[in-house]
Image: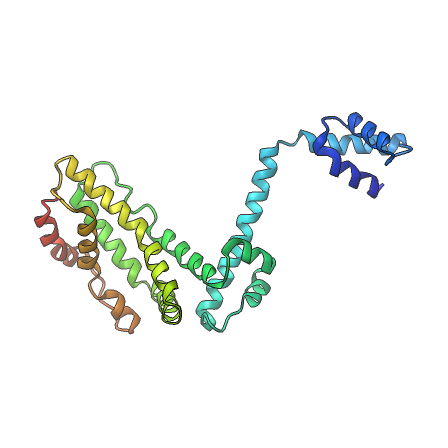
Length: 257
């Protein structure tokens, strides 16, 4: 019975009904006799499978894939932070997360790709949606809120620990560092530049070079916070008052309302 329904399942994608499938198997010589009990059980099983929408099957597969990806990222981040990047092997990560090395290579390419994915996930969790502007918020209010949240993200202990790992790997492999810097910052920079262009078009700002203004904004907000954090000199929390003072020249120069 098991071999019969192995054939049934392999062939089921090419047929629409159980009767058609049985006829195909009989003509191919794979089935010489079907008992009423087997046929009844098989018909019910196969037609249930045929009735299952393909998009539902795809969703289930995608869900499992995402669960595997999340488990690998969780294990990798824990072990990188516990033991250091160089001391952790992909095999050790797989033993903790489950799955296989083949899945790791398929999803992330290599160990550096896995590190990038770990950091990008943390970035997306901490920075995603920050430039979704609430109704009624002025450009100046948006920049102040964004500046405070960026500063808090960069100086968060988890961010600092991950950045130390990235810097260590970049010293050994400069090409990794260059690619990481470009990928890590491009999304946020493009989003903020788009805001600057929109505000200028609407008469709420006068920014002639949005890309350069983005670089100045981040330099103004962050200053040496990242370096101090990595050296263990934790910068003081920048509350609303000090951040307003820091941003005042920027807002004034570009006439951001």
